[in-house]
Image 1 (cartoon, rainbow, N blue to C red):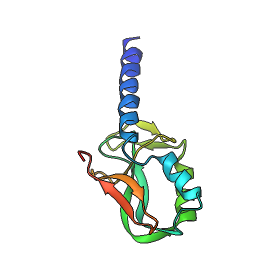
Image 2: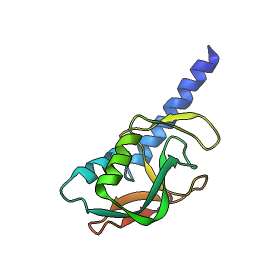
Image 3: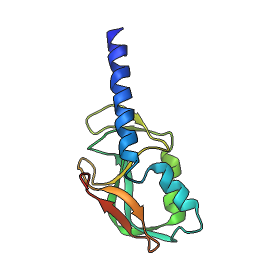
Image 4: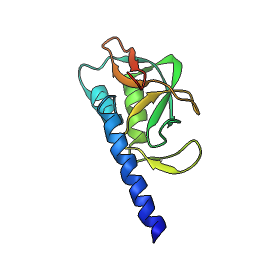
Length: 130
């Protein structure tokens, strides 16, 4: 019984901290809405594969990429991540959803948070402490 109780406390804390992060950066749901909007650029520069973020396993990180993706390709990638279970860097299963914060980082590394995407398709980031 104690393990379940302790896990519930940890899960609650994780969700509360994730909610704080999602207030200052783009989330998976925000990105999907943006890509579905008429204001979305046709191409987005610099977003590669998605992984669980090293800094917070319950968050997602796009690996930095040189290539450009179409908004349609990126939208498909993001929608496929909704409700999907990702494994944390050192273990654990995490379900990604609408309020999952987004980062820009190589697998196993920390990096800046994704704040927005400009009309030019360029990703705007900020360091976690900013």
